[in-house]
Image (cartoon, rainbow, N blue to C red):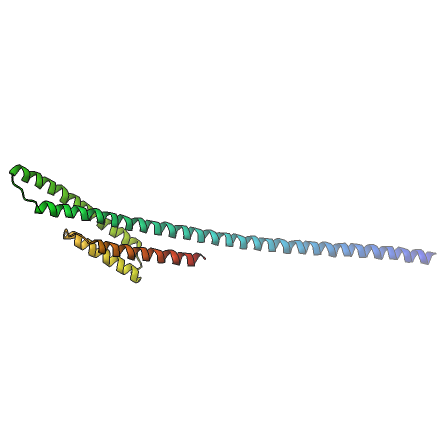
Length: 195
């Protein structure tokens, strides 16, 4: 019985020691597993933050490109609108020049009207030059053949206006087509970049 009791006692102690060792190993395994999960979670969160930042940057870039294209479109519209108005003013100036004056009183009125028309034409030419300068700031890619063609046409139009010559509707229409083509290409390129 003593032998049996000592064997049972040693079995109990060995079972207890095995349970303690198993518990310690299990605790170390749990701690190590939790540590790896925490590190993996930190890496996943960092990666998700990076992806979110990249998406945000891409969105901001896309939005700024859209605003840039919209501003360029508005400047071109302003240029065309002012060109059309300037054509009308120049035609009126030419009409006034061709009118024959019969009285001194009519001559003074004609001179006053001509002065107002010339002043309006000068202001519109200055506005056009300002608009062209702004467009040139936006269209800084001088290696782009579309940009070169647009700027060359606009500068030619400004030269004609500088001589107080009417720019033909065909010439303005050609500029509109060039600009439309350029803006369309810009939008297509932007779609490809953001896809």
